[in-house]
Amino acid sequence: MIRTSLKVFDTVFKDRFKHRAGNVLLQCFLFTIFLTFTFFFFNINNYLKKTSSSVVFYAFFKKGASSEGIALTKKAISNWPEVSNVKTISQNEGLELLKKSLGREGTILNTLESNPLPYTLEINIKPEFTDKEYLAQINEKLKKYEQLEWFDSTEKFISPLLQIRKYTSLIFSLGTVTVIFLILLTLRTTNRIFFFKYKNAFSLLELLGARKSFVVFPLIFEGFLELLFSSSISSVISFYLTLVVKEELSLLNIKLATLPITFYVCFIILFSLIGAVGGLSLKNREL
Image 1: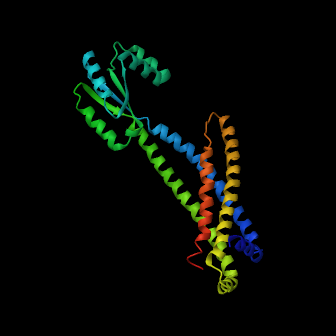
Image 2 (image 1 turned 120 degrees about the horizontal axis):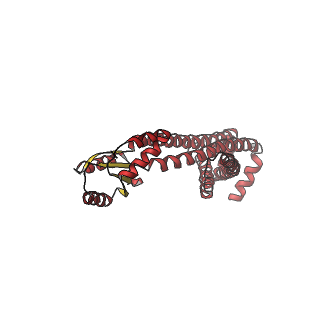
Image 3 (image 1 turned 120 degrees about the vertical axis):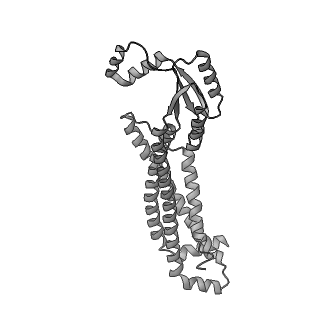
């Protein structure tokens, strides 16, 4: 029955290949843009994720704090579930870091008679605890330590990066939905053209006892093949295009990562199934 349906479909719709070929070209164009956009989003998101996940607190001890008190405070903070590690920065280490950060102007610190910097704790926060609610909890915990003069964190520098990451994720999600919508629209339009062009022939076949699946299955099969070809071709084009971009940017010391092969495989399978769904959508509406 399926074999007969395909044979009839092949003889009746001789002109469908022009429409299908046009769809494949359009879809290849859309997919190549989408995959290239995904490549850049993948690298930008990884960079923002890596950068925004490194929140550090600096806790400064009061002048005259005892070595025992500093050690106990460090040990207690190290046991917090939000903390990955704690490092003690001595007065001399702090002064050297300050000189280094000031560059040439750091030589002015050599005129100091004594080191005014306090002992400091560098508290590195785990990536999964960099949300504002967790950072607020850490702030409250640090306030309870009377030996601390004051403390600060790199959160103020990280927050803009978190916002950028949020917006880029939103843009990527909207782009993905748009691509899927356009693909379904092209499939839907093509199938409707076929159906209405040969509506009388379908009606005649139904009078002769043909089932809906006799007409629908070839559309499902062609939709699957159409998206299989276009997604495969665009994946190959995009993969080699990103390799060229990666190699060129590496000359500028910009390191990018290519999309994993598993992503391309899942991409091809997903859109091939979407192509089949595009043909299946006719079953309950036009027929």
